[in-house]
Image 1 (spheres, one colour):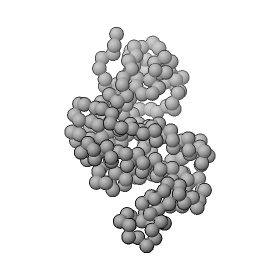
Image 2 (cartoon, helix red, strand yellow):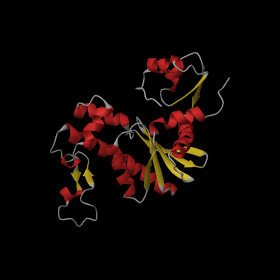
Image 3 (cartoon, helix red, strand yellow):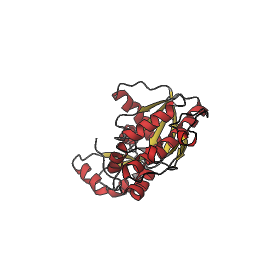
Length: 244
């Protein structure tokens, strides 16, 4: 499987020229642009949420996982969508405008990082305790019933403006808020397992660990789909027969 930058229709066309398929299933926010920009084969647009619901079980089986009957499936891409999966039934329960688009935009502004890969590398070497105000900073004597390392205010300290520290602070800002939203939905739906996928967590150990810790702190379990960037694409390929 191969990833191409968003909007690279010419790259998609070249990829297709080397394979010459007789049909193409597309999904996601750029599906209509891809459909309009390529030709020579039948094209079917597949609902993004349907595609994710179909793709996750296949990727899980390839990894040797057994998914529970009920779980949350989180698409963490440009933004975030939270899906409830109950057997074959998939429905969107919640979402957030916080996601990879937020990370990249603020990363460009604060860290001068011009790519997601650069921002991820910076975050891996940062120390967000120099950026975020922790509970231990506010209550050094303790006694509040919260762990001292918990975040009291994202970017509330800012004793460092080093790009690596700012990058890790951004990862925490997104990870803790998205994780908390997922936990709230899981609690409301009586779901124990939260399965994450999407390009924002792929190759991003800093964000993945923050999500894992946030979810675990509330008694839920976080799973990260191998090849989760391709969840929607795999599900679209598995969807029904192409329309005439």
